[in-house]
Image 1 (cartoon, rainbow, N blue to C red):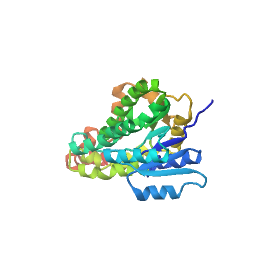
Image 2: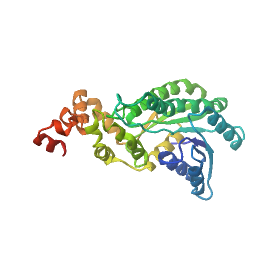
Image 3: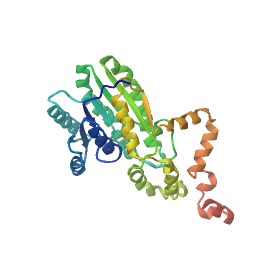
Image 4: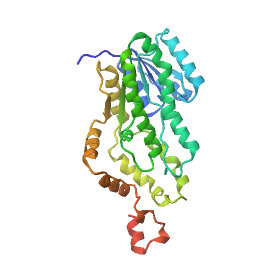
Length: 302
């Protein structure tokens, strides 16, 4: 298949995980990478690890701060002599885990500010140069959780559902200007994402979901059993950028598509029951120890 690689790629959230791996991967592949993030020290480390003979520049960028976005646009114009980027990878985001009825409005808004409004603000900032040239690529990093909702991940999953719809609309609206919009949908990935997301869950220990929250680590192990390295996602992003006619979506790893296919033919009631069981959300599992008989307590602890 013929390919027309983009020359300059900007990546948000490039200080860790998928963004960092993608920045190094694309730099090694010959792209001019502009890696962005909020932590200058981590960007310095990334730049220091760039392989010889490659070009990787860095710029500070907080996707929730209009002034920071404007400054990043100015820096990109400087680095590209006003041409702008050929491809934008909207990777910055984080996961908020907790029961939806217990999550505060402030935390929920913070989740949307980064994962939804931040993506759109950055896209609006960098698309004009692409439109002027009549060519460009926007790659939005969604998640398999943008099509499947998991217990205690409703806040995060809903932002990815929103990103799926926004990306579909952008794909329709920007194609006439030669701009392709592509979604990459990672599954479970070995990064610090899960650890960071799980850190605040103990604040829900005293809620009605306390029994399930106390098994959060056990649930995390179940979800990460099939996890792969971030290099798998970096390769999918590379494919989304270099293909002359990219697909609308790339699932990483590819066999995540089999999960979608299986869920599509399985009755919702069956899927619901399975997920509730995995997440310790049965009535018995949610009871406090003093509410259980001796036999039930032993069964619930297994």
